[in-house]
Amino acid sequence: MKDIQGINLLDLVDKYSAPLYVYDTQIIEDNYNKFINAFNVSKLGINYACKALTNLSILRFFNKLGAGLDCVSIQEIRLGLAAGYRPEDILFTPNNISEEEYADAINCGVGINVDNIEMLEYFGATYPDVPLCIRINPHMMAGGNRNISVGHIGSKFGISIHQLPLLERIVKSFDINVNGIHVHTGSDILDPEIFIKAAKLILGVVDKFETVKFVDFGSGFKVAYKPGGLYTDIEELGAEFSVMFNEYCNEKGRELELKFEPGKYLVSDAGYFLVKVNVVKQTPATTFVGVDSGQNHLIRPMYYNAHHEIVNISNLDGKKKIYSVVGYICETDTFGADRQLSQVSKDDILMFKNAGAYCFAMSSNYNSRYRPAEVLIHEGRDYLIRKRETQEDILKNQLDPISF
Ligand SMILES: *Cc1c(COP(=O)(O)O)cnc(C)c1O
Image (tube, rainbow, N blue to C red; front, side, top):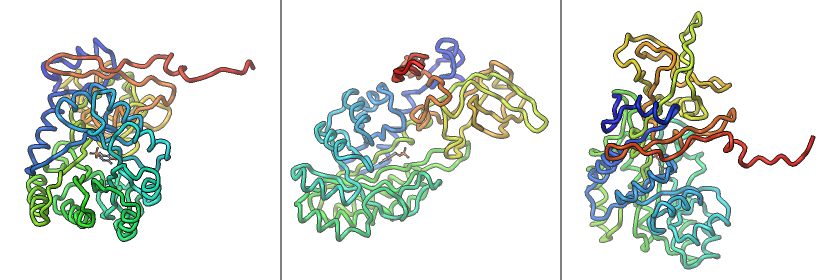
């Protein structure tokens, strides 16, 4: 794989230089269509969880596809509005934010999701006319990594399902218009049965609130990071889930909208990260490949122990050798230990796969380095959608008020 929509990736590096993020709209569109086609319900709403990849062009593209937006900060809301989303197509699902940030979101007119009892009481007293979605924590352990598992008993997210009686009392006493029930259990949904079990618990909550119009089952759909790796079979899940959901609606005589908010599923495999080899360093134990990037640009391997496939696209058919691919940051920023790559030489370009979700989005200026450029490939053409940073960006907010 060296081409995207007929565009050679090495040519892209010549044009924009490395390190470089590249995204493919065709893959995003295919993922989106596969997702919506997996469900067979009368009303389906997909909100793209934009924290995965927040470039404006990506947001605009999802808007064109017909998606709404799931935002977790007021800044994401503003990006979404700037990208052309209508406020009613945005659901705000933050946690532990200030009353001021909620007030700003309400002024923007977006949907509000509340994830704690204290804030619910505050809302009931302060904004009696604002409909609210309520985020429930069903306390089911899901997720492959404790850091990204958000449904378990010790998790900070959502209103505990064990507090349902209290929740009902507060909703009743303030006459809150609960328009939706929301759950986002964790980041790795693999087994449809477990997911459907959690969903049924949530529908038990929906039973309690007649005003509910939509049920949002969040995300956590898993993609394969390795060949043969585990992933959520969305067709199987969608088919089983739709039957369960339709049965519920029929039985209760309610026409509810089914919502999801995938991030990773939609953009992970649509992104590539291209880096250049600075050094091939032989030590007694290991052959290191040192590249012009590090945890400042792609932190998932170090932060989550995530696996990203690495391909030497400068020497696709070369002899295979074992390398450890490491970054240039003054930390142990290992991208991949003991990886089999086609023989690597200085100045080769390595490609990281699955670099669409939580990659650029989690980048930083650590070691005072620049964040990379981003390029979008659309209908066979490449577009620069974010400039590489410069020294000016590093200095931008720094003041130098004291003359020492
Ligand atoms: C992060 C997040 C998502 C998206 O999760 P993915 O694993 O990227 O699909 C959805 N909903 C909420 C509330 C989130 O915080």
